Length: 172
Image (cartoon, rainbow, N blue to C red; front, side, top):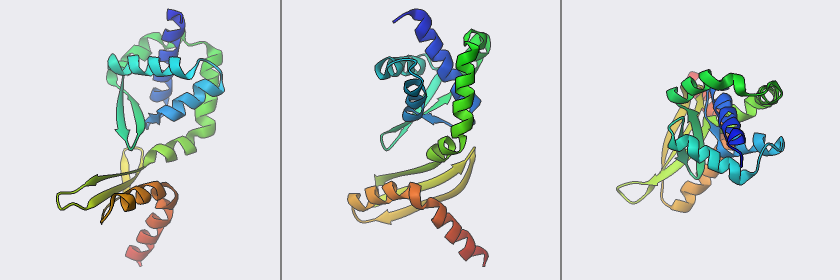
């Protein structure tokens, strides 16, 4: 694995994270790299790990999904070296982000997780964010871990209907 390639992959990730105003998941980054056949999955994971270790990107993990953000150091580094990204690759990234912007934002803006509370039930935390704003946030107590997991799994598909129902009910 040539150093030049690894450096380019790092710059590509920094560029993509800087271009969007929301985090990208490991799956979303992998989709871009693998669909365009830039590198292998394992090389990409090594590159991501190096970016996290060097504090150029940060990672937040929720229910087995890693969400990556560019850090201020990452943005500064990108500013110095963005001209090293070939224009063809930059066009590919811009096209990918433009074509998939709604889906990418929707995937990372709808979050659900759960935890065990002090009274032995489970609290399901559901959230829909748009940019830095929270549109809706719910905390629901359920008796079992299975209930909590099911609610988290269903949140992405149901969140828009639930939000709409709450808005209509409360504004009526």
